[in-house]
Length: 264
Image (cartoon, rainbow, N blue to C red; front, side, top):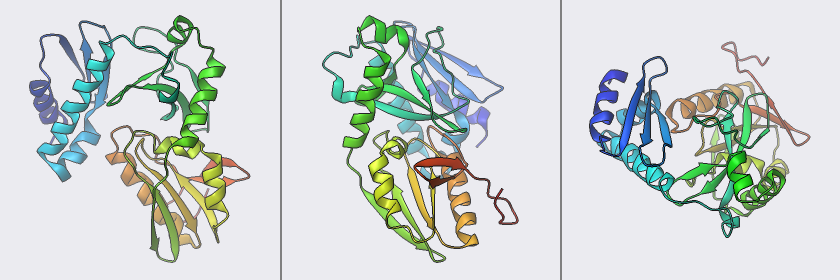
């Protein structure tokens, strides 16, 4: 399926009297905005096409549902007060905008050369990235928002699936709650897994809904984790980075897995 074909399908499915839809031909993105709130959501077509090739119509249904829920939430009044347990950090690439479409500056922290940490108010089936104006309106300091978010991410349940490939051991966190990648900020989790590592600890956060940790024991392992990260990155609803990271001294350092299997 081409980007043009997917665009036509989604435009037809997402037609609403109260919404405006604009197509970005350069980046293959659809922007759907509520006429009521003036806010909206941008969706990238290539990852949806990848999912469609696997799930067919179910992939389209998921996109429509997510857009409907997100815009519905945007049309309702939102508060931080009383929502302390619903504030979380979310990982995004460094190419992600630092302000909203209407010019409001988002609250964020630098993370790695490839990633930033933004902060979100969970709305149930969607979430709102927190901007400075919203924080001021609610009389919350940026420091308080960041502190609460980091505390909350440590409280998320962690369910790990494990697999061995070519003598390398891999851990997968994929609960699909929107904060799987955010769990990389749970330092105690990373330290606990590191205590079991026999080779080199490698971490991948290819998209929002997965965290991959590898115990890499040979050169083949680097190639495997590189391929995993790229595959998940291209399939993710909210891609972050296709580069894996070395985890050493509580720091993440991006690594490049080259075609000749050497590391740069």
